[in-house]
Image 1 (cartoon, rainbow, N blue to C red):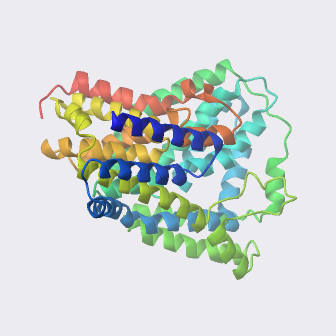
Image 2 (cartoon, helix red, strand yellow; image 1 turned 120 degrees about the horizontal axis):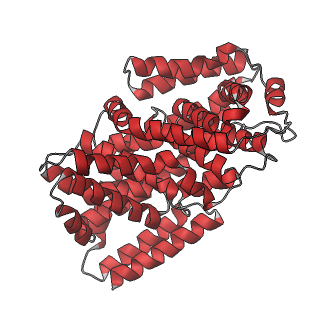
Image 3 (cartoon, rainbow, N blue to C red; image 1 turned 120 degrees about the vertical axis):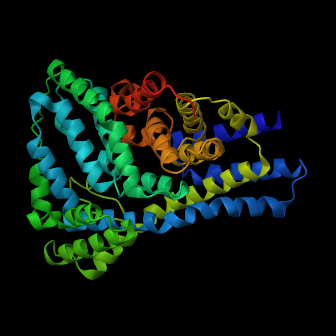
Amino acid sequence: MDLLFFLVVSFILLLVSTLKGYFIAYPLLISLVIFIALLLTKGFTLNSLIAMAIAGSKKSFSIISILLLIGAVMSVWMAAGTVPMLVYWGIKLINPHYFILSAFILTSLISLIIGTSFATASTIGLALIVAASGSGVNPNIIGGAIIAGAYFGDRCSPMSSGANLIAGITRTELYTNFKNMAVTAFYPLIISTILYLILSFANPVELANNTLAFEIDRAFNLNWITLLPALTIFLFCLLRIEVKIAMAASVIVASAIAMFVQGHSPIELLNFTITGFKLDSNSSLKEILAGGGILSMVRSATVIIISTAFAGIFAGTKTLNFIEKYVSKARSSGDLFLGTTTISILSAAFGCTQTIAILLTHQLVERKYIKEGLEGDRLAIDLENTAVVLAPLIPWNIAGLVPATILHIDAGYIPYAFYLYLIPILNLIQMKLVKRYKY
């Protein structure tokens, strides 16, 4: 009963914080304090609980530096004109006769390059929504295609914080995970593309007479050299060079372009790197081309540290053993994947963030995967195919709520985010019907 009370209170705190736009770390900290106080009444000592929390948080330390680098990369890419260049050509190349399909493909490609769903939604995603305004087409259809595409890269880009988090907690190699993700995403991607093509034919879009491309061209020097930072990441990934080195090299290249091509001073660039890129307050692009910065990732890192502290206490106190017992009953790979899917949905609904969904699901299923000799690469890909893509389908989860808010749409986008739910559905069907074998 005490545990149920704690879960209800924590869920209400997280939900209110999410809907009101408060920093999610605050309700997490309050929930952590409540949970520790509850456990103290059960006979646990404060020192032992703190030790459990620290042991859990240590799992996140390996990716903190990557998160900070991602923040630096995003802001410097903005300043160098890399992201503006991608958005500019995205707008120029969009085909109004295949608008919805083009929206999915464009956001998929750009999210693969920049590795963040929120930045994809707030740049090319918002530009596409603005371009289609007044067309009469349900914006939730377009929004569903955009959000699905945004999470294509969020799932399998070397710049993705989620992909790096999963590689860190499962102790797997990032590029091996990408290869596995490509295999399991093939059919969902093909079917999604066909469905978006059908929707494009059924919902032709007349583009609004907007001046976004002109404004971007006027605000930045759109030289092809501005794509070098993205090409640097791509080349280093092909060579399978460690991601931190690839990002650091990209930051150096982008910094040079920002100073010598875009005309930013070293002081401006340092400010962008720390606090995020900002255009002049009078610019019509100030809402579309902004963001990044190390400080923005400090917030994400804080959430991850608190969440892993929670996971450490859950593990040390065996509070959620009853859920682990449910998973332990799995007798085939299909049963285990179904259990992982169910837990990831509940974790995403309860935790209100993709990070908590990943960490809590990992915490609750890891023991079973280890027992069956399926830890490592298999656990990593199952987390990518469940927690990562299902979190944006929970209306109050930040993973879906924030992009939807940016795009000025509501939860009506969910039925049209085909790629996100086809991944777990098709993988489950494959495991259940095609690969009927015992562990």
